[in-house]
Length: 401
Image (cartoon, rainbow, N blue to C red):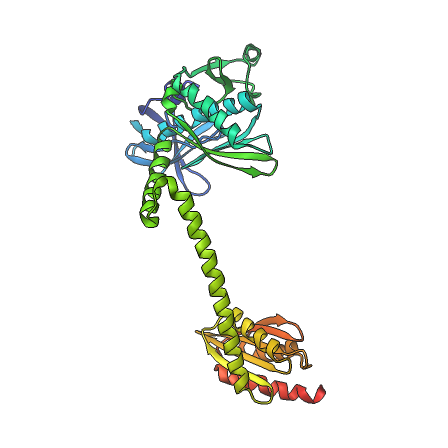
């Protein structure tokens, strides 16, 4: 462990080392292996550190086949000199805050509710833990959050200790360790004892605060979303900005925001119903107008940029008004044609077979049933020409009725 400087000092941001190897991996990405490093590799739910090695960006750090590989934007020009590494401290400290916060929150859930943490993920914006329970109440979350923040306020030390497997029996571990050798414990005295290989601050006060944002059911577990440290301030800032903008837009104070939004939603629903009713009335008027112009119980029309759904609604309205009517609709939509063929209940033409005969003319596809069919294809002819084709096909079918 001597070459893993992040275990000796998690606050170390600069170091020097010698290059032991520089190679390309099978995918062609350059990486270097150093005789010692302060860069933490991805592992244990914690993402890797970033930074630079000899002013070349470190884009990833992974521990593979027992060696820590530092993936770079490009190769180092000279590997025979002592190189310098510089960590992205803001990213490192953020991970330290989030990881320590996870330990505190998981321990709090276990102490208050006896809910064990089964998994942990440290994301770029939020952190999640999955709890071994299928339900979680708002009151329970409040109690857990209060305990977690009390532990932070007490500024308890966060200690790390290397122990053997035999020595584990001296500690009340929150969960069983996965490794059998080089076991590293992260300890918050009289609160949490846990095996962990991540980086953490020296005391709980550096976590600053924990805020649970939300939770949801994930199979048989509950996934809790939360943030710690600087991320709490970031979340607060984002939410405050949105809230202030909403108070201006809705002309309502912060305390009345829920009522104002609820009222706005109800008004929107009322307007939607009115709009739907008016559209239905317009549809009936359009249907009656088309019926008034029909000849021989046939309504045929070419539209511009009308959706297939709109054609279907209009066709259904017409055959509901007059069950003796046959409907052929075509809409010219840029480089495509949309078709609807429908008949009233008093007629017997097969709309599905009629459409199936017409669609190959435009390399089209469609479907439906004997009474109602729809489809579309390429605009290889005009809408009026397609109507003529449908009429010809309908005449061919008429004698067999």
